[in-house]
Image (cartoon, rainbow, N blue to C red; front, side):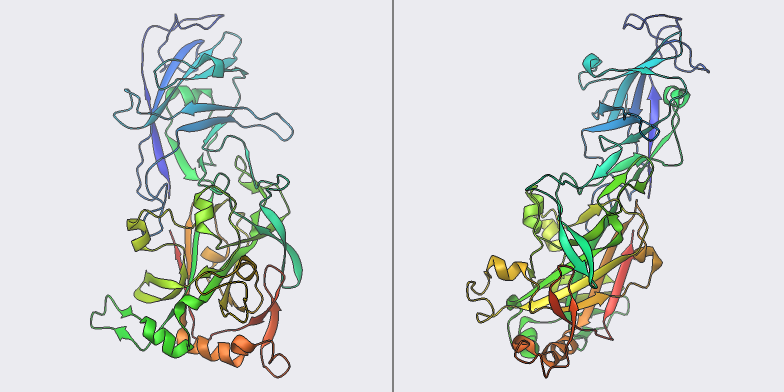
Length: 457
């Protein structure tokens, strides 16, 4: 779950005691303690493990570092002004053909020192120099420019709206690509001092966020190919869906909420702790808007044929954040990246059926915005997570949560709770009402044989 960066050094010139720091002087970087002088440092980005950055087909993080810069942060006390230096990431000649970073440290006789990033042209970026660091200062590396990660609360563009879960007020969070992205920081157990920066201590980078995919699939447990015990496959046809549900799969829609105490509005990357008591829920949302770097909307998403493999292979209709077919087509997926606190999370799945009577302003395949945004008429179930590895997510891990449901059992629950005419049957129906995370009154259902699949990477 970690990847390691190895520091490499260019050793030139002789060690000079100095009261000023210019490019006319260089020194040997191997001495301890660090003597006054100029130190040119080259850091190659050499990953030792495969499960690191990015997302690949099996929902794990890949080994690429895609950002064009990394930040060196001074570790500060509460109330102290933050200081960070942006260092370009590039294929520097001294980094063995790998991406790397270069910077210059200039130490003075009074013990203070400056840090200057080296640009992609190999020259110091002098107007980016940070000065007056003390010899006992400590540092960490991060892909985020500040110590604090926070949701955007700009008026008219806020990522936070109001909601209700189990009758209690909560927040609904709307993803933004520039905010909900992968974040890295150096090993939280290591604080880098001047000697470590100059002498080339190995830097271990971990993710300062968690990744999530969620989904719900309705399958046919009676249509199973089990000739190969190592590859049991469940499948369903559109005709079978129509037979069971008395309507086409493309009239059905799903929304998934994920959230709880682990998702907060602000998070300190330096300390790995939440800096806000405001928590909330994200929804599966509009992946197209997310990929276009806009705020996504918490709308219902149409059923499509989906495949999920974990032990057995489940082919069914529903919603899942990514499939192999989408990867081949170049889809960026519909993931959630956010720092977490390690507190409990909850997952809710809501299902709706589109009808013209219920949505007179929409058409089949193109429901109205009002219908897509409303939880009214939905059937809701809570995904019961029994694994503490998923219940209490940790940063630096990727989580995949899938609820696999027998379509016939769902059809029975849907019809028992009034089906499309649930409002007319409210007084006589056995449906149990509950609140969705948006605060709307919805019907509650539980399928005792539903399979909850939780994979942690």
